[in-house]
Amino acid sequence: MDEWYHYLLLVVVGFAVGFINTIAGGGSLLALPTLIFLGLPPSVANGTNRVAIIIQTSLATAGFKSKGVSTFPFNVYLGISALIGAIIGAQIAVDIKGETFNRILAIVMLAVVLIIIFKPKINVEELAERTTGKHLWIGIIAFFFIGIYGGFINAGIGFVIILFLHYVNRMNLVRVNATKVSVVLAYTLSALVVFIINDKIDWLAGFTLAIGTGAGGWVSSRVSVNKGDGFIKTFLVIMVIAMAIKLWFFTKV
Image 1: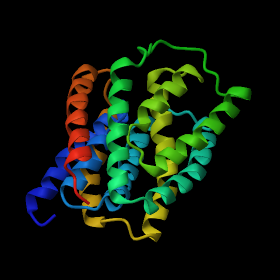
Image 2: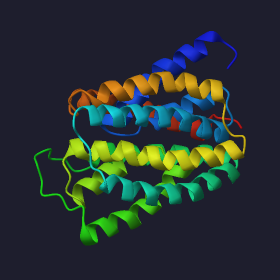
Image 3: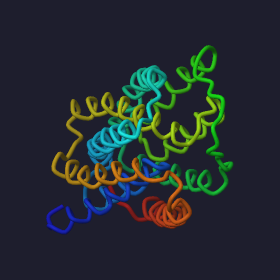
Image 4: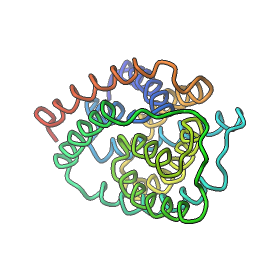
């Protein structure tokens, strides 16, 4: 990352990432390949992306709260469980070889495309939420494993969280997204510590990307959660397929 326009690109990509992550998910499928293509080793790109995720989810959480949307203490229980799992996942990410990471990322990206295309339509009407008793414990256990994946790579995790919270806990889409960003914030903090300890973060690139993701997260948390959804899905599918092919066949590490 020797050219000034690389950092400008990170801000622009970051805004799209923050916007997409907050209203749906999959933004890291743009951020990670961009960081890798700009010259960062895969493990460093993975760690660097966490800086931006923390800024984005912090501002998105504040944005939802400013609109009166909060799922406390349910989100805290899930966040603690995911935080523990993320420590395991992040350590796996630190130890894995770069080429293996790239190919896993390519597979994940294509899998998420299928989720984007074929996932059941989410009804945003008010539902009778199930956030206590056995459904709370099911969520706590599930989010431990979600945290492992989030700590490892994070890409596409938003779609998994949305589907789980909607169909298991029966939350409407607005409250799903409010829960999602706060939980991702919690487990990303623990993952970030692991990456810091292992010196896997480019701080300048991370904070540059965070400028965009923070702005995108704040804006998207305060607008209609359905606005532009079709366009975002189409754009994301095209970009993900192109980047997955690039990662699998042409990226050298």
